[in-house]
Length: 148
Image (cartoon, rainbow, N blue to C red; front, side):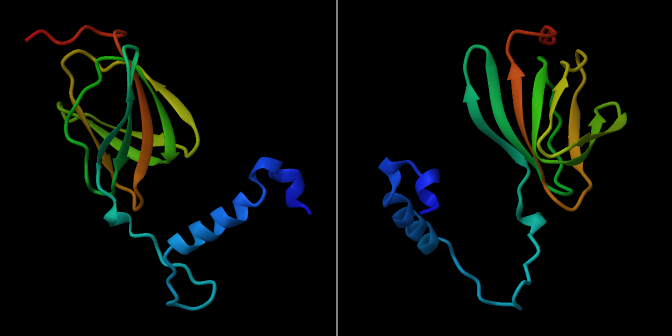
């Protein structure tokens, strides 16, 4: 059989059972014409951060920026890598009102330096689909925290 070359011997027999379990767990919608797909509900996404991992070296989170649901004002005291899971263009607005667009391509990674001392920014998605990124922020690198 073709799958004998793909599936390790230890898993043969398990894979078909797993597929049946997964197939039974997936809801089926029988509405609509054959080949017709429902448009994703972009507005159902909620803007926010979900922690993924943290240790003494990095803090990692997933950010979802839904259309017209901006991230609240914040700052990054350390540099970070951004990995775009679902790309798009964000308008970054500083607390001084300066705007700049940043475009993230799905599947690409980017480097961002620490924010200038004292500057806050918010991210706004003016597109029609959510933007999803993984942020890997270094700890103890970059500018010193703002003085009180």
